[in-house]
Image (cartoon, rainbow, N blue to C red; front, top):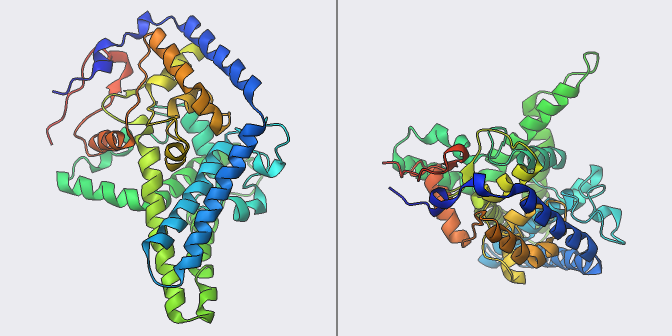
Length: 377
């Protein structure tokens, strides 16, 4: 048996939800009054760091396969995701003087996809899957990113094969999971909105390759190394290898800071939708996990996804605000007896992995009085 203090001590019926919601609204008013140039400057600085990483990777990539180039490429791509995540959430729409290209109305829209966020996922598909479905149904069956449910198909395999599958997912997940997953729900949305007299959607394989895989792989693994043929075949080959290594690193990096956010034996899973806004906020807190916070390089290294609780309560605010309000949110949760879970990312990776391979299970919200059982595996 594995003791889970959150399951043993948390009684949602004793939470004064109206008062809890009022406290969250007061914090939101504080956020809105504080948004300003500091948030804009922080976004520009973060973008410059990502570009610098990419330039370092590119400048050293032709010499030979090496960890500096791979790290530069990987960090640059992860930073583009960081920017897309917070900008697409409308986090910078209300920052005074922010140009349209750095708001949800312009970032990665249309042709700017190739400038702002040329990832293996299509921007519109990812925005719909993540911002709408995941954030609206966190931890529910309607959440497309509910890892515990998504991983059940491997639980019939021997334990060692489950771990192999987890590692393979970690090094490929943006292409193997996120690209097709986000495209599928986006296709379902468009199909539901399509009129009978309008043209049918293109075949799934054509969209997956034409909108997702080919643009990304042609740029990063063909167009990027090709000019270095003017130096030598070795130089071009080195750029290709470093770009591939960077791809593995950015997959590992993003998987490590995204996957554990809502998964673990001490995180709640919900069999129903929240009854009202107050309970919705409660679900966002007890269905999310924070990592270490409070330091610029710690926050940047975790792509500002370490403030997951604050992000799920206030998804449309600038990154810098999360660091400022995090102590307030934690104090409010503690005052109302609402579990506020924060651990190192390494601990959370372990707990997520145990759920993926079937060693542990998440806590069903309707039976929170029962500790979770560690499954024999």
